[in-house]
Image 1 (cartoon, rainbow, N blue to C red):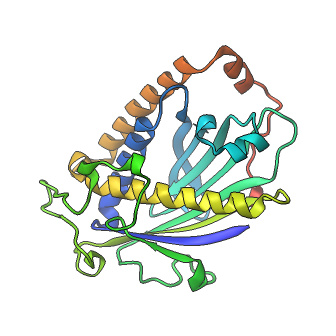
Image 2: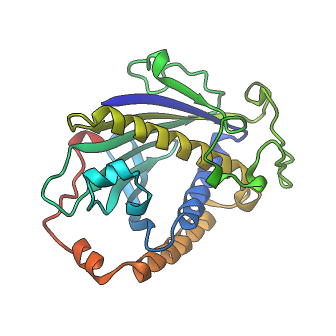
Length: 278
């Protein structure tokens, strides 16, 4: 198992980001869905937890077969999607994911992500309150300067030129994490495990590189899209979330083959995450 802690600062407050996060995830998922692949929302409903209190539970199927590197596709050629389950007890969330296969051989693979949001610039050395993450496993991501894959770059999301008309924030400049008011940090502890001899290290490194890119792109977009969501109520952003989810689900189903849809209905396929994810 490979564990890393990512810290991503944004020029927002934790209270503001509650709306921004929901809007960003919904819009980003909608944008990334097409040609029968993308993010299908299976469940999105209120959920209460004895320790964390009231929150929201979501289950998503992430269809990405054609996006896998060839060396993974050769090993698991019939992988169809990833099951993601998330419990959002804002400002704390738990996310777990695993691969679903069409064959009986299912490698031991899963990802577990714990997230906490705090109004600081990433200075909390033990945000999860158990054992501090070793320094060599901590990665501070900079939404202004860190590179993202070229295919995800959009000039209107470049935070070096971005300005929010609603709030007057921006553009970001070097050292902004120590100058911005407000400032918050998204702390994410990511554990991934792929227990297949000869491939474990390579796959786990690939997963963390992918997570790194996703976190940078998503948090950049949350800030760049600020004028689209800032000032919304929780009820308003939930309605937008519902509408985008319906559009995305309908688009995915219309592009998927009858054989694939029959596969999805097979009852014998494993769907349960490891117990420690819950």
